[in-house]
Length: 198
Image (cartoon, rainbow, N blue to C red; front, side, top):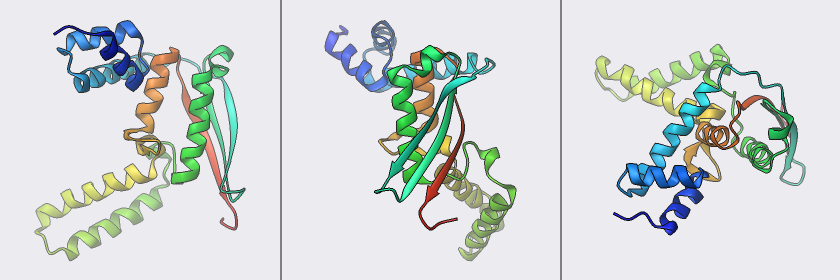
């Protein structure tokens, strides 16, 4: 099948990958748009993993205020160079991340950031709910694991569905930025404030 400029543009709009990368992905997948998107996402993840060992000491701290001053977020995102920190893509990512955190109120950036007592309490609630279902013991653990996976998807920033594009996670969004900018990028920390809440 012939790869048209319109197909390449559509894939580029979906993935933010380079034109040649988009064309090659379409050729490699027989012009299957969804497979091409998956292929480019995998390549972006591979690039991200290669950069994981690098130092990321530049970046920005961004303040996002939402709801007429009722919710505020401070977020620090680091990269390797000042040049990358000033790029439009990086700044847009940080702004969107602040808005996302305001909307979703994650408990931590990664699973290991969630306090163990919260994880233990959630697991015991899930186990009690599973037992109430009356299912056999051998099924209970699978039910608990499924409920815990949903808990992490709702509570862990990197695993949450990105509010502007729910078909991808924050980790996917971060990987796309790493692939585009070509540097290690990490979400270092965040704080979310809500009026009248501890």
